[in-house]
Image 1 (tube, one colour):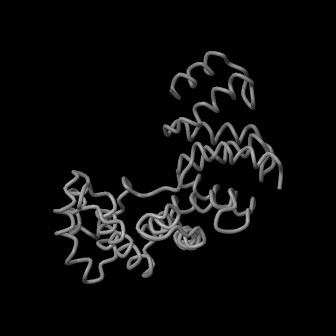
Image 2: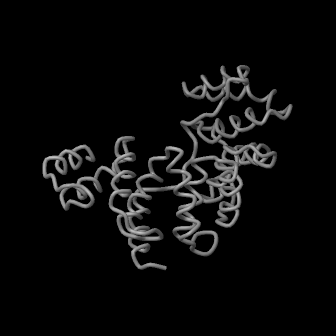
Length: 237
């Protein structure tokens, strides 16, 4: 284990937390019957969403079960039901629904609606990650990088970070940029570091913006440029 990895993941804890899908609602074109519920969730009308979803969810519609879990998890007041959310996620996750597997992993990670269990979180993240779910790939990488739910493993951390970064997850792009900058788990490469930090910064990741300001200030893989350093520093605020 390279000593730089410890420093990287101290930074990671301030940037990156497991991703719970409150905004990325993957209702596909082949599920038009769920669009009214999706619209209701986005408008904050969780009661209407639940009424619409329940008949489909009870018939085994995995997307409806996922949205039931999401609506119960994100509802306000007495409509919020983390335990009920967990039950619906578990139904869909057990049948192979990747987004439900990711959210179920996050519930186990946080102890939300279920007892905290990092090993269970890792199992569910892996199940979703192996199906190509980008946020789950990122979450799995974080757990490997911090040694949560199992032994720390730099190789697996980098493997899953690359997958998530290539799929466009800004947090994974930012973290991968840091790893290349510091030679932690990968061979140091300032050019690749800059490329990944820039992708993350352009996607709005404030931590990556702050790192880019330092990259330009110190000239790490790019010519030193005080004006660009100042611009990224100001954008990060």
